[in-house]
Image 1 (cartoon, helix red, strand yellow):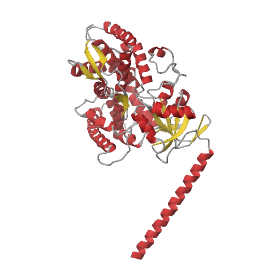
Image 2 (cartoon, helix red, strand yellow):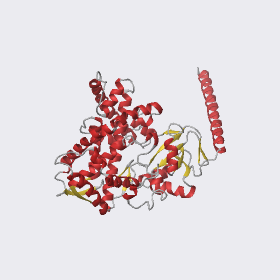
Image 3 (cartoon, one colour):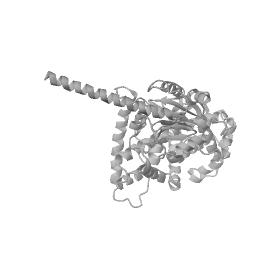
Image 4 (cartoon, one colour):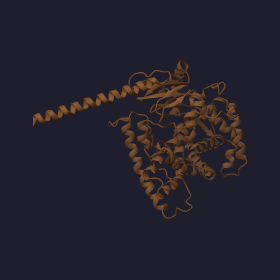
Length: 478
């Protein structure tokens, strides 16, 4: 028996030696083939780790562009290679690069999020879908945000904002603006867009998931990812019950099915076009995409208005004129929001200076020839918002706050806070309405000022004001 075991062990060791030898030859051959190509300049850093630690250090300080990307652009140019989170990565900058890589989604590159993000957002979310599956899900979302859908949304958002002010602002002399807007935008995406009633504890569950989206996917008890995964399972259980209840309501009346986004998703489920898992995963993704980034955008608009009183006066006048055109208690309409042109210029200029997202990763699905360099199949590509937002070629004197620059046509793919191409943010119009409607009620109902005018911005994992942007406020007497 011992001899047989020794023989089996010897055989296994021999097989393992052959396997490792074969893998080594494959890696050497692959490396040799890659070396024949003209790769972009740059440093790959340590094996596997690469320059990940420097990337994370800069990210935590909200200095990714200033401390990580910009020094490498100065040294290597607008396209350079590095290694991030175990993957060889090419960082690209400029409107032409944004256009090339974002518009060639599904052809040359595909969305490539970190493993933790995929597990927490869901394998069946729109960010992981390709081709026809992506178009199907995106079409359902787009229908809810068509002109007719937006016309229905505007009064609902108005009512949500007014109710939020009554519940959380009335009688207060200070308020944590960022936290307040997170509560509001969370309610808007759930109740106004999805048609799901917000219950106590739901926001905290989603915040628990967000904590782990860029953490190492380590399932050790107590780790950030473990806690986030636990919160994700609680959300999934809650949403499955909501979806199944909605399915009972939808079945049997599919013809002419109208309503909020959840109803449309469930109708597609009943028709067999999507699965229950796809409904749940896309609700989760859309909640994250629609509320946290919008809250940050609103906070940064308020920061800029506080620092630029002339801009605030012009924006306030725009809203006073709209308010004066309405009867007492009458809600805004979609047509009213189209009159908020200067407000949207202010919002876009704020998002140029403080983009809610840094950029995103793609993965090359073929060998890509770009700007005289080869990006090998399987390598990651990282495009950044700052790569154009802070470039004097597109925005003269880029560090100045000048909303009027958006009176002119901005070059395509230079202003990209919502991405671009086939994966441009599906909730772009919802975010716009959230920002400008909130500002309408805030500036016409309240006087306010920043408690920390020079409050720093940090990231964990998304950007946020370090103190939560507390403001002093009082009811406005017009």
